[in-house]
Length: 399
Ligand code: SAH
Image (cartoon, rainbow, N blue to C red; front, side, top):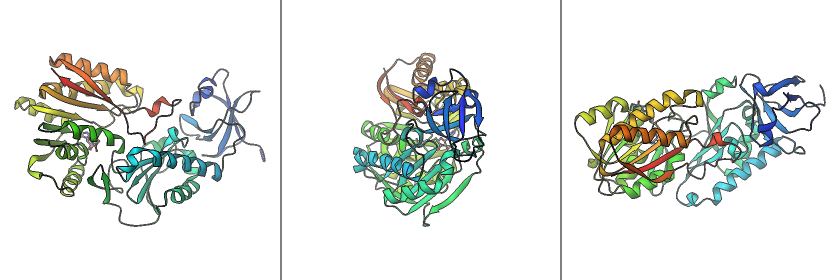
């Protein structure tokens, strides 16, 4: 097939989602592969006899058989194309108000930035990159060059250690992809609060940047309240609440490493450490313990890990969300606030709200929604890619 691009021929009628500009081609939609494309190679996607609908990265071992780079028939996929996409992604962040309040941001958000499988977070002067698809992996060098060029930072640490790499048939990889420096305590500032991000060993890329604006909101609501921060990780919400004048904060996490990070973050700020305590515990059982001890709080934050990455796990996830939310309602004082989140792609905002409603009902709590939470704006959601809309949350007040 020299000189001719490999092609994915779609089964009849399976071009609908591409026409809506959804960037994934599932294996079941592919009728035939013409040519012999290698992993990550650019293929043309069309129905038999039809025009080219998209150029996409081929991923033979994944259910997501190809991820679209471009829907523009005239566009060539090369280093210059990717360079332009990186430039566009970084330009968006420069424009955001958050850029004036922090030196830590998501610079590239995968599909929603037109760069499927590429995640890049900035922590002070270190970039952390995840190459999570065959296509991103194929163009790794070109993408790294563009990231260094447009960000002006010389250090990129790679955290391609997410499980999804296995689905793409890619080995896990971590380490410095560009530069080399101490990166286990990247000193970031978020709205005047200091955090030390462990880019090498921390969860995901080290910090949960998608919750930045929500931490700020909690800070504004925390004054004089007793706060319970379940799933506290390295203390993002806890320290924000303390800075906002919380009377006392109890922070729970099952990870000793996360709690050690939280204590370091606390020490990095000039705050009253006597008002906060950390406990290594399983939230599911510890909330029951607190209930049995008749403990009550004025502000509870529930920010659990992703219980349902896909819709297939939604049922079990629903049970887990209901359990912790029910217990939280029982632990909430009258007039108290519950900030409850889900980052499960498999659980829609509507489903999440109905789970929380069921939890309140069973807890005998009368509660109302006063705000809805979403991801920070450096985590854009492409309109054609609803899968990118994973983080949802509710702020509830108990009567
Ligand atoms: N709110 C945090 C992010 C939370 S991430 C922030 O803004 O930074 C989810 C956290 O839940 C992780 O730190 C993980 O260690 C913890 N976790 C997962 N399962 C848990 C369980 N069963 N009990 C307690 N913590 C748990």
